[in-house]
Image 1 (cartoon, rainbow, N blue to C red):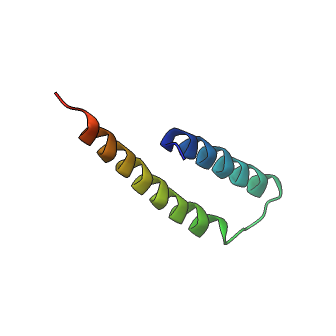
Image 2: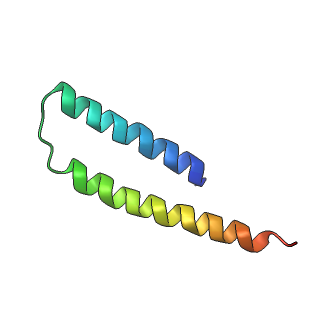
Length: 59
């Protein structure tokens, strides 16, 4: 999966969870850990993609 697509999907779902949590005045205990772990994975994925692409570039 492309890192940019992964970031866009994360942003859309995180915003949707936040929107519906505010709309229904819900206290979803699961949302913070899920989004936290997903953001850690996204951070790692982005760094792997950047590292891999930097190795391919030859001056």
